[in-house]
Image (tube, rainbow, N blue to C red; front, side, top):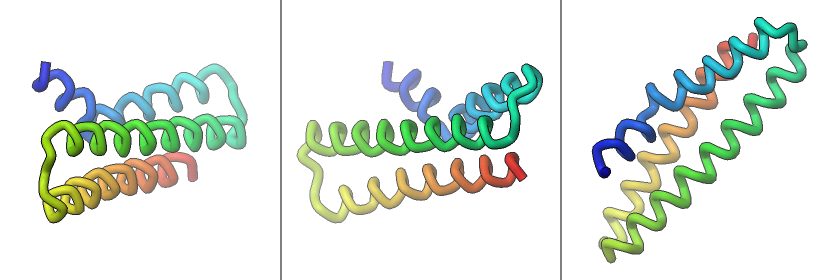
Length: 91
């Protein structure tokens, strides 16, 4: 189960899902503003989900503060990379 969760929450998988949804919208004739809005909502949702999952994992393990900050920084970096990639796609 942990392997599946790790794969599903990987940057590549999340970006691939967002790109897939974006391409379907573009193929269906959605305008750029609509695509950007949907992508923004997806990215915000992913950011929240990653943060919540990270916090839950940290709470479950009772990890030390330095490890918590490291994990939050890693998850924030992933979210930033996804946001940046999506912004580049929408240009």
